[in-house]
Length: 275
Image 1: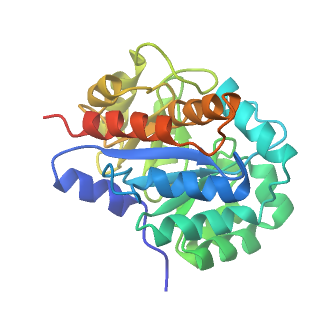
Image 2: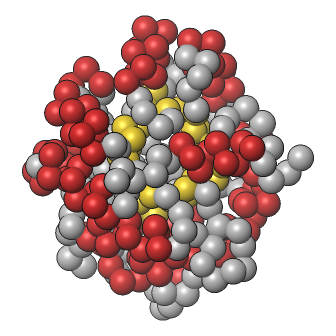
């Protein structure tokens, strides 16, 4: 049996008249076990908030050139503490047990090292919905296209404000699940205001690939920004704002205190639900 598509979480939110909230956390931080607890919190397992609609699990990499300083800092600590590629499958299982679909986001070198076919098999067996590949373009993705077809996995490619119309059209055609629109140029991270380029990019995608679901990421950090992005995107993607609360808790000597995480989560879930 194929795992559920991550698109189902987005379409369910759309049927409720709102955008979906996608939350990113890395496996292995503040520890492997602690990251599973954080992911459960993100899913709303404690009952205090509705939780995110879809979880994006980061697999830390030694050379995260596209990640901002917050994600790099958490990823480096996870690697120093011994996180391994196989730990991502336990994270997927934890998210699925909490009632949310899960996708994995990582750099392609880790997938190649593990083995593309083996990773697809193990991700599907863990209940994962698919893979976000920030440094893999569809032109070079034949092994992943084949493996994802075999195991029924979503393949979520990225487009940016600099992407040509031909590139957007081709990428959307080969995407399965939804398309990740990077709202700003450069590395990831929270920003004081949302990108002015985001609505224009989403409008271009809708004109070129009108049936494609679109998630917008890179920069959303609070409920006001989430509400703004929710007016034009199908999904709002948040990562650094969540991780920053966990780094602050660890710096204060309480690495598994998720009070700050819950606070940001509550703000963001309210944001995407504003009418």
